[in-house]
Length: 179
Image (tube, rainbow, N blue to C red):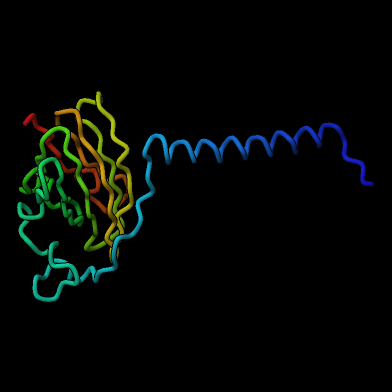
């Protein structure tokens, strides 16, 4: 039988216990707190995504205001096209309409990029409300994520992946309004 020093044995046991604790933390956060890992919803051609005649997914070729859809009372879907340096719809600083939804609504976001990799994090403008919306937006893929916005207020969609010279201007506005 091989001899293992007492301090090494304690280290191995502590490492195994930490692995179990980390696995439990991931399981609990996924099931109890509703944290979800965004999965690619579909593949698209980023060159033709905004062309209504050639697009694989023509919803992204609609005017920005028509990409915010009410499916049923309290259920919405929003198709956001990211490109240097704006989210469409949402980038009010580039003339895009803000995304407006009633408080308590469940929103399914569909994101894709026309040019480079972007990131997305949705945070409240005043820092008082938090969301768990945080994802990567890749050209050639449509990412889908569902979130519920219970608290009225203004939220910012922030690009957190460097995407070029005017990256700091890439943010969008999501307004959650009382019904």
